[in-house]
Image (tube, rainbow, N blue to C red; front, side, top):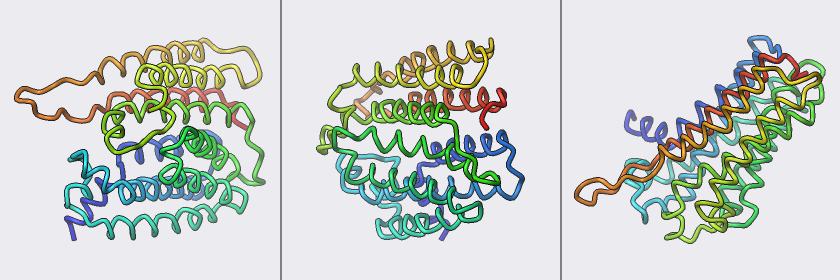
Length: 283
């Protein structure tokens, strides 16, 4: 049992799951949710992240095995494909169930974000519109958090736009470490069509645009803190690209998958959320 639990944890894509759930929790606190509703918000986002991660490993098991993804327990035989598939189905059902603890409008928005993420896993990952589910799902997250407030207030359009831009940038950044492996297994999403350099440019521009939207969107002039956040959003991805350059190990051993790019994206996301919460202009 402990082996299965550990395998499920590894197959859940734990780093992005924790990061996105933390972002949701910070945003819920920032917009004024009480403890019970904030817990429901975080539980909903966490369940959605688990459903997305587990279904991804279920669908990609053959491809992951073909390219030797040692970080994927289904690919290495440490976890059965059936087990991760059942876990994904449970998480899919749990997402709207947890969201209904808020209100129907918020639950519908959370469900939309989940469906969009699942559509990325299949069939949109290998299409020219692969960026679309990321934009929709990321945009749905703050919309869900705001709609979950009493009275279900409408989230501001600039907030949705900033989140969608952040999600689009995350897509290009997250795919970069996998371009070579994906080429071997026939995945041809938008980043693959643009290539490594084009995807780096797209990711940097989109992450910067997300932060600029958060700074310029709320009423009033931009603060010095906001302008500093824009500067950080421009610098952090560049540092992440540099840190993620592949390094060939002695003896021809396959290097570990670089994660600096993803961590750079999450750093920008956390900067944006702290900026947003500190501004007090969400609703």
